[in-house]
Length: 190
Image 1: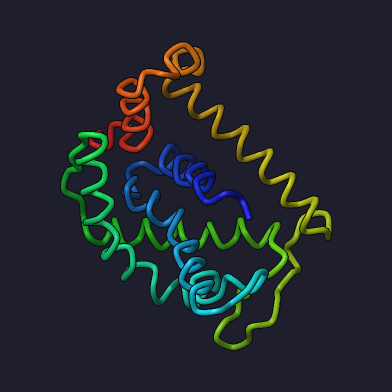
Image 2 (image 1 turned 90 degrees about the vertical axis):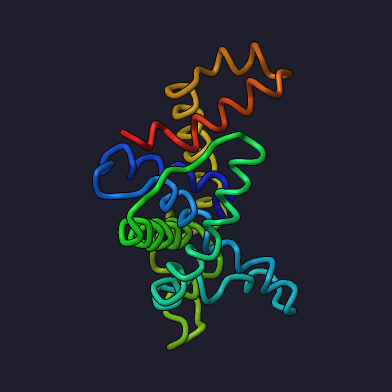
């Protein structure tokens, strides 16, 4: 899978192109949300590659993502406030729920391009749907997607903060916190 944090890339791109239609916090939470099921399924005894199921299916995502998004938001908000000193503003509940749903669905589509196991049609079937895997080889596709998303996140960081500044101040924790906060809020009040 694209490392969970790299899914930030699609949240960022959607927000940059469709700022008026989506809530950035909802896009970020939705971009990570499907992977919340992985540790739960592993604790329940599921094993790789079948460690993705309900939230990595279209129907499961549509039914549960917005609900989980509303449950996760207070935790997300508290973490941003306590660690990064960022207070989130008010947002439209509909816009937030729509953002979570769209971003979670895009997460599933991205994963379907390079995962060994894709339960896209759960609960109808738990069978793997591998028709979208790039190069018809999930391992090559996974390497490609990780390289692509790593390059994209470096481009985003460079554009928003500046890679030179980060390299120069890599040991300054307060500077790094400011950089992370900047990447998470992107002047959402605009």
